[in-house]
Image (cartoon, rainbow, N blue to C red):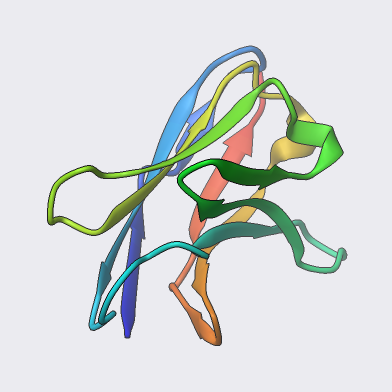
Length: 111
């Protein structure tokens, strides 16, 4: 399994970013894919997970601001739309599927 993230960058507080993760080598459904983040000096935490077509998980700190979706075509892409970004959202964001991880993409929220 290979997971490749993109879409990180520098954004001002209140701004938006959309992260993408393209998955290859997964046979069957990509349900269960998720996004984690790790800020300097902190543990990696689960931010959002696409559990099924009718169920998603979000950590409390991002509820109402972040949305996880999956592509409807064959591209096997998972997205994380991040709105109303705050400085505390600054971290390296990782795509995850089971025991497999992407390389991470940096998100920095700063004025």
